[in-house]
Every structure is written in structure tokens, then in C-alpha cells.
Amino acid sequence: MAVFARMFLFILLMVITSCSMIGFNNTNNHVIRYINLNAIYEHLYNNSNEAQELKRKMDSLNKKIYDVENAKASASESELNYYREEMAKLKEQEKQIKSGFYSKIKSALETIANKYDADFVFNSSDGLVYSKSEYDITDEIIKELKSINERTSPVYQ
Image 1 (cartoon, helix red, strand yellow):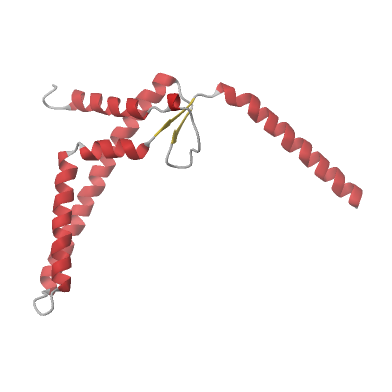
Image 2 (tube, one colour):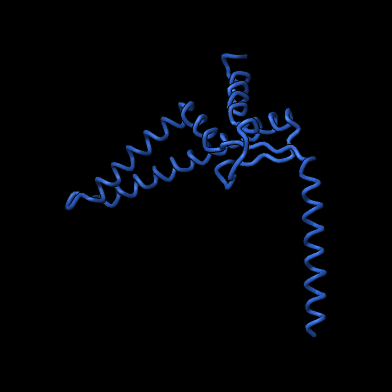
């Protein structure tokens, strides 16, 4: 029985070793780049008048909700419900804005990834431990987003 277990472990070790060697040989064939998705999102957010206005409205409404919830005798349940309904509407608008941002990011990312013939593009904030900065295409994505914005702007047309 011990001989069988040793044989099994030996064969398993050989299979794992051969698979890892195959993996090392194939990695040179892939083009890998990375981006900082947070920086790209922040760029879009900070340059969107619609997003900034929505944030101001949400902050103001949050303050009103806080004030009504903490008022002792003058707290009106109907007023509080109204504010909460308005907040739900604003959160739906926020989802639409975010969806638009990610759609734009995806479009720009596809354009730049095709430019580099990239097989993989990683997000640096999701576990990328190290990479040379020459593989970072974040700035190019932001430039592409600016270009898309200029091409689709009513002023541009």
C-alpha cells in the first residue's frame, strides 16, 4: 500500500511539474497590460457636470433626511417618506450615470487593448502585485475617453 501511495505521489508530482513547465513556455506569447480602473472612473466622475450635480443633490437630501430624523417633535413622517422617495430616484439616476461611465470605459479599453493586441488587461487595484510601468495603459484609456467625448460632443459635430 505504501508503495502505491509513493508511486501515486511521484506521478502526481511529475504531472504538476510538466504542466507548470508548459505554462512557463506559453506566457511569452501573451500580451498583458494593466490599468488603474479607479483613476479612470475618477477622471470621468470629476469631469461630468451631471455626476457632480447629482452628488450635490444627494448630499443636500441626505442632510435633510438627517435633520428630519433627528428633529424631536417636528419630525414629519410624510416629509421623511418624501425625502426617501426622492433619494431612491437620485440613486437610480446614479446607477444610470455609472452604467454610462463603464460603457465608455469599456469602449476606450477595447480600442487601446486592440492597439496593443493585448490578450489580458488587469486592474491594478485588484491584486496586481508588480508590473513595470511601461505596461500601464491607464493614461491612454483616459486620452481615448477624452477623444470619444470630443467626437460625440454636440459642439464637436
